[in-house]
Length: 173
Image (cartoon, rainbow, N blue to C red; front, side, top):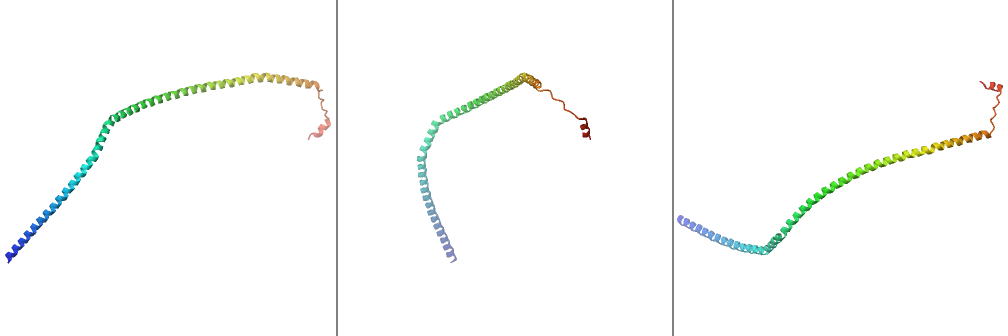
């Protein structure tokens, strides 16, 4: 019976191995069918994306082909405009600097001229005051002298005060 048992066991193992192989074949068949369905659905989705995206890509490509030269022209124009603005701002700055320098020079000249004018007016005022004051003082002095002479001639001369020799002795201490 040891032989039968070994044969039986062998048959059982072979049957189990055969069943496992058949089961594995069914599993592989199921995986194949699932992958095929998935591949078909992915292929359908890719086709839908292509039909939806390709026109947009074509339109974008057409738009870029139409707009590209304009963009290059605009960038060139902007570059030239920027360079022109730099040149003009440098010119404007030099003109402003020159104008400010001229204003400073003219202001300095005006200051000098006004200073000289005010000095001259001050000297002229002093000269006029001296020219008017001197004769006015002389006339005032002449009038005061005449007044004093007339006043002296009108009033009699003052009398000398009497002094008593004895009264003076008593006052001496």
